[in-house]
Length: 82
Length: 150
Image (cartoon, rainbow over all chains, first blue to last red; front, top):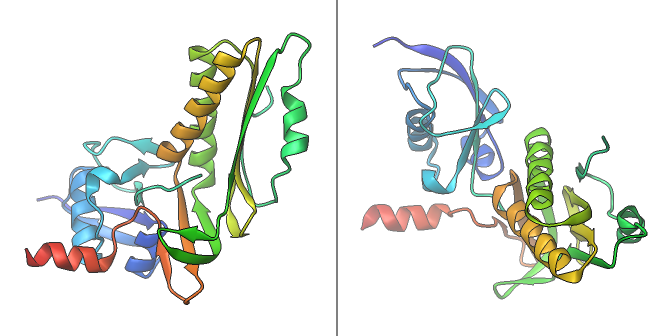
C-alpha cells in the first residue's frame, strides 16, 4: 500500500501524552479517522474519536476526509471552553 | 467589518466591551460572563490554564455569532474568550448582545455561549491545591486502563 508523509499536530492532553507538539508521520492511513486511530494507539490517547475534532491544513474537517502527502493534520481532544 | 469575536491573552474588561452593544433602537442588552471558580467537582482549584488553536477558534467564534444574528433579531453581538493562565475570579469568557426586545437578547446570548463551549478548540487545564492537574472533559489514562481491562 502506498505510504504518504504528513505532519500530525497535537493539542492539550494529546500534546502532553504524545510528548511533542507535532511529528512527521509516514502512514498508510487514507482518512483522518484512520490516522487518528493509528496515533491514538501509539501514544495512548484515551478519548473516543467521536468526542474529538480534526483540522486539516488549518480548517476543521470531517473524520472521513481523505489525506494527502504534505498535509498538516491537527488533532483536538474534547473541548472545554467557557 | 470589525471582528465580532476575539481570542485574547489579556484580561477581559466587561464594562468596555458592553459599550460596543449600545444603540438608540436597542431596548434590551444581555451579557454573560464566565468566571474562574475555586471548586470543580469537589476539588479545590488554584488556577486555570486555557489553551487554544487561536485562528480556528476565532473563525469558529465568528461563525457562531453570524449564526446568532441569522436566528435572532439582534442589533449587536460580540464575544471574547481569554486564554493563558487565569486566577480565581478572572473572567474567562464574555458574550454580549443587544436587541430591540429582551426575548431575542436572552435567547441569542444563551445560544452563543452554548455553541462557544461546544465548538471552539479551547481546552481547560485545572491546577488543584493538592498539586494535581486535569484537562477538563478529557478522558484520563486511568479511565482508559479500566475500560481496556473490561
